[in-house]
Length: 175
Image (tube, rainbow, N blue to C red; front, side):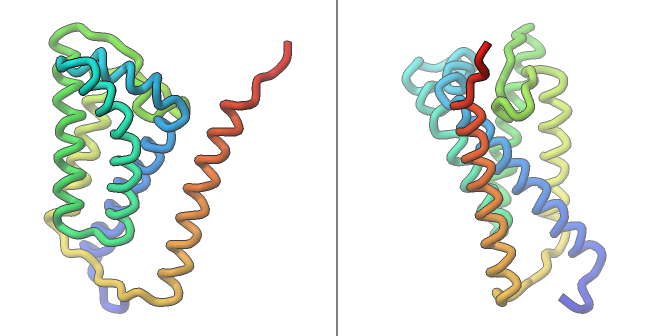
């Protein structure tokens, strides 16, 4: 990693930001996956079963894309992430024009939000981050013991977030 330029570090930072965003959003949606699938089925103008299936699959796709983006960062993963965020952007723009105001559960119960202007801003920022990833050179890091340790720590963090979200869902205060 010696001699890496500032643009390569910018690429690395943007890759981690977008990847972690995808992972956190996917895990947040898993907390109430059927609720998110219902939201998707009200947003997407397609047969209910198809849109519900999209809503069920989307969190897993986000987590997978986020992990692959952080670990491998190949061109097809970056372009797939860009396509996903462009779809999110189009849904938000469509909702503004149709005055559709729905709580989207875009980050699940972690960070509730509504589809619309806020979603446009969020999607635009992430699209710009991905454009930066595309336009800047990436750091070629060979797999070393350090990378295995960081991959292990990232995996453990994601697993603990998932179990924490399950525990908070199971815990119902008395009273």
